[in-house]
Length: 426
Image 1 (tube, rainbow, N blue to C red):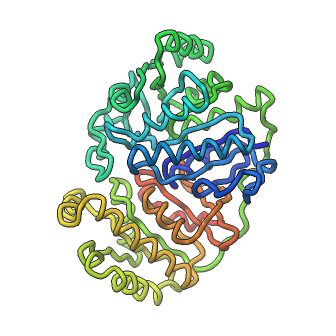
Image 2: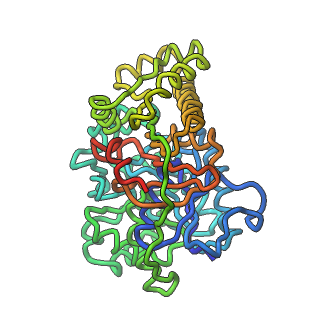
Image 3: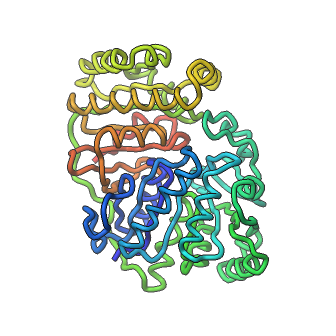
């Protein structure tokens, strides 16, 4: 049976996690939303995979909804026979003072009857590190990295112990750098001490790749691990060392993908803005006007498709709502924060459906919320995980649609990601 059951709070995060599991030898399938009906009736055969990742769209939903959906996912994974569990959120800890990371983690711990879980968002390969409980992005404190301007989850404090304790019903501790450096045994002793102090969650300092393997070994028996996808790098080797997982030579093979290529982007992160600007210097790119979309979404969707169709023969095109923080603020002031985001996600999802109808079989989607809207509009139910484009971003395949998808978290990927993605596509 599948060993590891994972719950991701957005679609790109799910793919990011699945990518790291596959690259480290775990056969992994990504499921879009909690499957309907009992696990025994699912299209996923848990005897043919090592990990199942359920992709939710719960990062920015109301806390009660996020908790309920995450608990439902946990229940389904337990029915499927999974023995270890992982709650995946963004490596930039995207959340608010109310949640959703703390409340979901609290609920999963309670359902599993567990007393403590680590919170380990670091992913050193993408520049996300944690030191003395503070999160850094490429050496810059989180609240100075551009994440302070995020339209939905502005991260205004790099101190994750303080941030998570504001969300959680329990007390939050810290496993510091010195303990991680001392090895897995020291980490286990620290966890035991935190339990005695009645801590429910523990932020973990993590500065480099070896730290991920230290944590994997220390947490091999943990019922629940929470964090970014980085910590998943160290878990498969620990599972194999304990005899829980067979060695795999190639868990990432996909069939060749043909057809036209396109990109849709809804992320307004710093890196995605750079990627949009770089691509637009060389290839056709169309920016949606939020006001025009609000006035007549049907017209704007069709106009975007009419613009794209005659250019698909020449290579990938880009359609985006990505904008600078000041423009985002103006749009939100005029249309409402939640309304503006939902409107543009819907438009990009419908545009994606139209592009696929025009013969696009290789589609890059930038932004977690946008990716969630797109895969639901397309009717994607499961994804097989393929080769990596950049750390945290693989190509995936929806077999029943014959479609290749690369679902990119906003801040991930090199500046030339949109061009290079199609150079490495199967």
